[in-house]
Image (tube, rainbow, N blue to C red; front, side, top):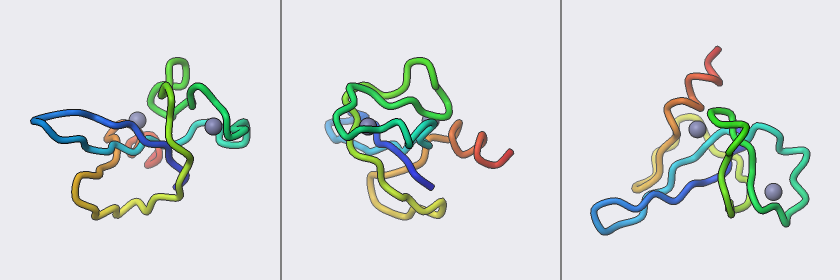
Length: 74
Ligand SMILES: [Zn+2]
Ligand SMILES: [Zn+2]
C-alpha cells in the first residue's frame, strides 16, 4: 500500500509511522505536505517520499498508523 512517513520522537529515539497516502497521484515530488487517509485535511507536513509498504510490515522502529489500517480494511 502506498504510504507516506511520519517521524515520531519518543523516549530519545525516532520511530517511523506509515500513513496511507490519500491522493498520491497529486504528488509532484516537491510537496510541502501529503494528505493521508486518517487526516486528509491536515496530512503530513514535510513528508518523505511515498513508498510501497507491505501491510504486514515487520521492521524495527516502524509501524502502521492504526487509523489508516482501519480505513484500508473497510
Ligand atoms: Zn494515519
Ligand atoms: Zn508529494
